[in-house]
Each structure stands twice: as structure tokens, then as C-alpha cells.
View (cartoon, rainbow over the protein chains, first blue to last red):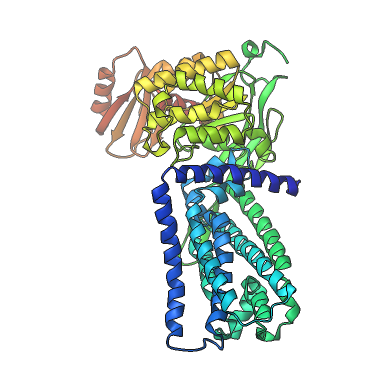
Length: 274
Length: 337
């Protein structure tokens, strides 16, 4: 535990091995895999169809045009999809704590977090990522934005740090589930709920909510702040525009904090049992 | 390393070759109970209390006790799943809770109640993953797997998802999984629970060979005294978190095996009955346990009791682990204040 880099490396190795096994096992039933992935893609796509229907009645939503909304939707969806792909399994940890099967992970020579995250690794969750990226791709074509090198670079940075922030939320949620055992809904509110919120512009939400997702649970850094910079839109709460470049730092801080929470929760589990 | 440790293994005595060292270990759980809206009462449960023993390398030790006595808690502490509240614990010189992953390479664990295999995947997938996770050299892996497949008769089961295996098949699969990386110590928590007679015989034979040929240290908990009789020379009995017996199996037989137990339910609570040739070993409400020599018939004893006391119901128990422990506990309670 004293060697965080060694831990991360061991975790990455374990994650690769376990997720690889699950991928191979899913691919033995190719037809079933193809169907669930397409289903996942279509199901998440329905959300965007809802937005399109809305725009058949109005020209603007919270002052934003359809391509702009699509940009927000695509960035939030793809970032969340990435987090769900790599860390979504952490959401089911509560069940393992309750039925005691977490013990099996503790007797193996690999970091527990990686084992839980890779458990039942579901490649079909790629459907959500692909769908988010497709909407994002369309919005990039349709947007009327003066692209600069900085703005272009900011798009991949946004997706990666956004995915990392959501992953940190999944981790913190898993830590909370060890302690509270039955708190999956709290985590879902922050992850799935956060994703749904970030698909709309901040102008449709109240200031208190915006303060909460900026300073408490920093979901605003997933896409709003960098995206609004790219779209040349005013910032909510009179925040400084330099915050557009903060997401990587915020993501690193969130992961570190979630890592500490996870360690503390696991220590609590090991001193109380199930 | 001494080559005679197996024969020298004196129960309870600290040996220089001690492989498992448990010294004054305690485990206290903080239990919170709901006592109305938002109110919780807290109280401590002492699952393991000042537990001390050592196990030499290559020993095979039976660890028995009634439900809730602290057996599983002990195993969880030895494997690093739980951290002791107090005391010192070492396995192969390693503190399990601090160096969990390092110790994991050197130990195998089988929980009879639940599997450590990947539930939805074929058995062989779990084994392949173990091979990579434990970094087992290819030759060793092939050899160990072949051996387990042959002796535990897993040949037809390798492609079957774990969730479709019967309890006995799954248990054999779990035992194999725990042994692929050549662990120095194997913990078995109820390895024969729910198994049919044939499976039990197979599992026992396999464990005996493993201990004899590889010198694997084995600690097993069980409810089945036959497991212990056939496998272990040494047995430890735990009750209410305390070690109440640590010694040869024969000694345990002498203590509890020479007597049968008559369990009587009276119509009301009474002080311990006073009957010839029998003594009360336990009283619990209107129920009393009377021990009497195994060679004696129960009939006259029952007649005498029925004559003098308001008898509601009764049963005779052959000497089993429960009665052995009941006696042990009675003895323990009479010595301790």
C-alpha cells in the first residue's frame, strides 16, 4: 500500500486480465453480444430523439441551438459512457458486500478495486460511448464555431478528464456502498443523474444547483465549463473563463480523493466484516 | 528448516518452525441495532477472545466449534480478510492484514458456503485466470491442473459454468482452484458441508495425499467429526471465541466420547436434576443435558427421571461434536469464574 504507483500498475494488470476474460466469454456468443450492443446504442439514442422532438417545437433551449445542445449531449454521453465502461461495475458492489462475496476478492493477489471494476466487464457498454461520439461528431459538423488549436485540443481533453471525473464518482459511490451497504441509488443519482443533467445547458438550471455541481460534486467540469468556452458562451455564476482548462486537475483531485475514500472504506470493511 | 517438524508437532507448544502464529488475538465487532427512528444502540460482540496457538509447517489441524464460535472469523483473520482488534498474528512470517496480496500467493482458501470462482464462467476460465493472476509457470500449472482434474474427477466439468455445478462438484472445483499455485497453507472452511458420502470420501483422500506428498499445511473447520478423525491428529476446539481444547484427537474422544447425553425437556424450570449414574452438564430453561456412561442403557435412567420429575420430552444423543463441546464448555465454565 505504501507504493501507489505499484498499486496502480498491479491494478491495471488485474483489470486487463479480468476484463479480457469477460470479453472472451461474451464473444463466444457473438449474436447475443451484437444484439445487446446495438440495443444499448439504440436505447441511449432514444434520449437524443427526445431532444430532437423538443426542437421540432422550439428553436432554442435555454438560449442554445440544436447543434450546441448536441455538443453538450455528445460530450456528456461519451465521457459518462467511458466511465461506465471502465468503472460501472463498481455500482454493483453493494450486492457483493451484502452476500459476502467480496471476501473472494480479498484472498486474491490483486488490488480489490481493480477486481471489482473489471467484474462482469460488459463490452456492450461501448454502445453508449459510440452513440455519444456519433452525436458529438454530428454537432462538430453543424456548429458555427471559430475553431482555434486550443479549442480543438480541448475536445479530447474534455472527454478523458470528464470520464475520469465520472469514474471517481463511481469509486466514491463504491466506497460509500461498503459502509452503507445499500446505497446504490445515491450513486446512481450522481452518475446517471449527473449525465442526464449535463446534456442540457446550465442556463436551464438554478444557481444553487450550479453551485453544487461546481464546488461540491464537480460535475460542471465534466463538460459544461470547457464546452461553454468552446461555444463562446457566458459562464454561469460569473466563473473565470480560465476554468475551461481546469478539468484535468479537477479529475486528478477527484480520483485521488476517491482513492483515499476507497482505502478508508476497505479498511473499515476489514475491521468490521460483513 | 527442520525436517522433523511434522512428527514433533506438539500441540500448543511454541515451535521454532511455527508456520502460523496466533498470539492473544481478539476480534471485537461493533454491532448497531435499530432502536427506533434514527436511534441505534451499540454493543460489542467479542467473536474471538485472547486466542493463541501455533501450527507447524506441514501440520493438518482440525478447527471445530459450534456455530458462531469464531471459526470463520479466525480464518478470515488468518487470510487477511479481517484485521484483528488486538494481538499478534503471523503466517509464514507475514502479517496477513498488512500484506494481504503478498500472502495471497502463498495460501489457498476454500469457503464451503460460497465459491471463490467466477460464477458465470466455465471452470476452466477461472483456472486460466488464476494462472495469470498468480503468475503460475506454465509447467507447474499444467501439472497441478492435471493432478487435480484426475484426483478430483473434474474432467467433464471444466467447460461447465460454475453456477451449473452441483454443490459437490463446485466444492471440488474450488479446492482445485485453491491449489493451482502450490500454496504452502490451505484453509478449508467447511469443505465437506452438503456433500454426499462419495464426494466426501474423495475430498478427504485428496487432502490426505496433498498433506503427505506436498507437505501442505492444512487448517480445516468442519461440523463433521469424521473429517477430523480421518485427516487430523490434532484438533482445536473453539467456543464463544475462546480456545477450549488444543490437543490430540484421541484426548478429545476420551473427554467427550465416553459418554452419551440424555436431553430432557421438563414441564418447568428446575434446578439441576439429581439422578444416579448421570450428571447434569448443561441447563437451559426447562431443558437439561445429562451425561451418562456410554455403556449403560438409557431406559432405567429415563424411568427414574420420569418417576420423580415432570418430564415433557426427551432424546438421547450419541457422543458427537456438539456434546463434546458442551462438556468442554461446562468444564471451562466451572474452572473460570
